Amino acid sequence: MHSTCRRHRWKLVVGLVVLLMALTALPASAWDEPGVPQPTPMRDAHPHPDADPDADADPDPLADLDLPDLALPDLATDPGSALGDLASGGRAPGPALAPGAPAAAGGPPSEPLTPAVTNPRMFHGLAFDTCMTPSLDTMRRWRSSKYGAVGVYYGGRGRACPHQPRLGHRWMKEVQRLGWRVLPVYVGSQSPCVVAGLKKTYRIGRHAWRQGTQEGRDAVRTARAVGIRAGSPLYLDMEAYKYRQKKCARTTLTFVRGWDRQVRERGYVPGFYSSADSGVAHMRAAARAGVRDLPAVIWFARWHTRPRLAREPVLRGSAWSSRRRIHQYAGNVKERHGGRTLVIDRNLVHAPVARIR
Image (cartoon, rainbow, N blue to C red; front, top):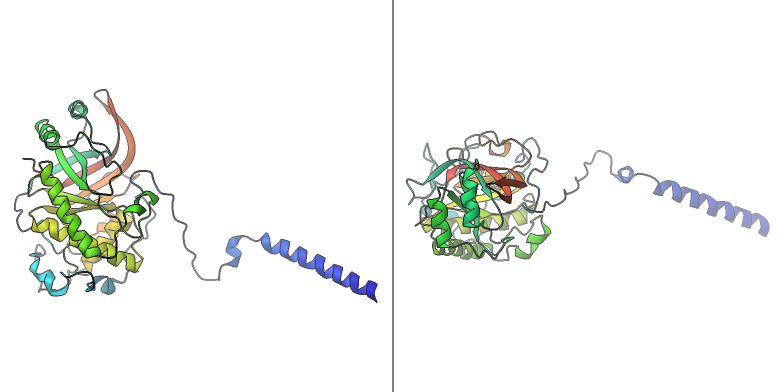
């Protein structure tokens, strides 16, 4: 009897071992609940910009976004919400909207460039941007290139290259004298759900409106210090983030609106740079929901594609359509002109550029 029991126990143990080995050999997808779509793995972060802006996109990145919820002001952190928006001076081009009414679906953002800027300096052509401000000799040699404008990371606590010994009023005046146009970029605090690990140090804090307001003032102050006059655009760089996370999206949008309002009130033009499939899709959704204090110019990153301004799928229709777009179509590429090599991002521009005093 004991021998029989031992044999049965041994067979049971062997059977369990065989079953366990069979189960562990199954692919992970075999455990997924039938009919339930599984999340797509995140793509690796790109070195610079910090996340690859050419991420896969749905046919309509706004289709499943809760637009009415997005449009609700955050009264706890946004003292300028609700009725305060009506004092911003914003009005959609074309047919007038009733105060507080949402913008028409597919329509432009509800802000002009800025009430104080009636004749901004425009540029239509190719531009490059690079982390470190190039020397004046390099800028002189690069006049032989196809580029006519340069993106300059002039301020903000989130810059990848915070120490810019060449950048100053003299540099700005000299590059203007050489015939260059300047796109001033401010890399401030980043979204709480920013993708790039290196940018997590600079995430927006608990008081998003206050922080956006303070950094908007700093953006103007720093611009003036390097000779950028009122009437110029200041482009807020917000690296790729998971904008479908509602709490994070609300915090980010509150910060951006606070920053925009300060820049606009001081006579500058608020611009916004981000990945087409994250930050730009977020701003587009906010515009469709009738949110005020949005950027006046959009600089969207979509790499590995031909440069184009009018056919960006996220910016369908007339949103930011008339002289308000920049397409960053390639990044981290080496180019050599006049015997000088730079690692740059490439851009197609039809947008305002800086006025240098």
